[in-house]
Length: 548
Image 1 (cartoon, rainbow, N blue to C red):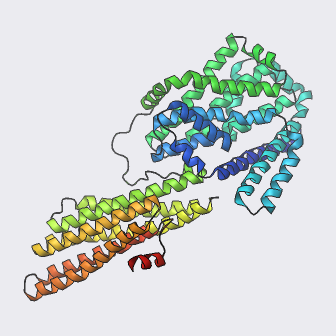
Image 2 (cartoon, helix red, strand yellow):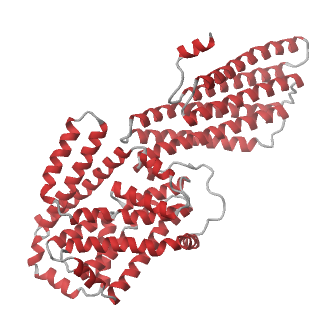
Image 3 (cartoon, rainbow, N blue to C red):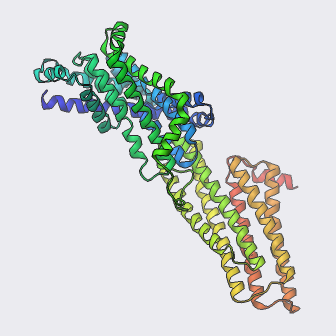
């Protein structure tokens, strides 16, 4: 092969990989929220998990991408390790779709696919049609890449050196190593299978050698998953280990089958087409391996836990529970998880406010450090969630998801401000004890009443945001609570002035009381903002008519 052949081969691989990428992205965007629904159906039922894994991988055309995504889901708590096993097995089955497409040998139609896809992308105004055009364009690039790779390797037919290597390469280890290295470098089992099938199109690789290269490719496909676990939690590393164990066991099983049974002769009897033979071996490897290991999935989980034990000591408190960069490859899921992380932040802020306020009312600082650590976590979440939302905004997302992300930006800011007021209350409690300030029992009762109203408003607002719906009745409840907080503040300020005039409380106690009322009133404003940051809500006109 000349340098031009190598350059052409590299170009063919590039077209193939890019074709798979944009075809998967187009299918994913066209599917939209259906991916969310698919993942919601993942239960402890192993067969359903396998089917979901196979379906998603068939859509995005990459088992590595699906498995990396699963690692992200496990890392964020969206999926349990026991559920991940079935999805990983299903992903291995779903990736056979690429080899099946290649075996159809539709390279002659690649220009037609490209033309049709580009026309749909450029001239259609509907997003869904554009996504379909993207899928068709990717389809065309995939087959054009296969044709280019195959053509570039045609000179190998007449290469005495290459043919001599194949004649001597009877040791299965050679084939396994070649398959592993190619896949590890390309970071895509689909691409490495494509290269193998491109060589088969030229008839330059015997079926026996192809089988062992295929087994090496299966092991090499675990490399991207293992790399993706760097810096993740223990369970994520275990999910990657399960993927490695699954593929290694399958490779060992099929090496034995190939060496000691007439397996290859059976494949040859099915068809004389070497490209189809590779596709059949690929499918059999995935399906049989899944059928054999699925009943032992719990054993795989236990083995992964022994290989990667839990580290001693708690993990860093400043962590994200639901967000992970790996799931950015699936924008609809990333959007869903951003909402969950925001609701977690809201719960932390609400509870912190309650703890801090009760510290002030009871003159007790035993939870002071807890409040300050939680405030640090809330600030951490504010920064990380906002940064993550910026990343999501840069992706191809639906209009509805884009609007939801816009609402999240505002809500995260309001939650962070509630957290700041909780910190104010904790610091006020510390000052209360240090300065030996005593609030009257009446003042404490008034503050307790206002706190309960504020917490109720936060709960109502958070529930409305979580459901992304605010009907007229719920809106009236929230507005009434906010108005009650304002009214309580005004009324309690007047009561405070009377107590001050009657000498029932000191100046410092009065300042503490007024500042606390202000904190509560401002928290109520932020809570109301959260309620109104929903998808569906009554208009101002509807609210006015209802009030009349």
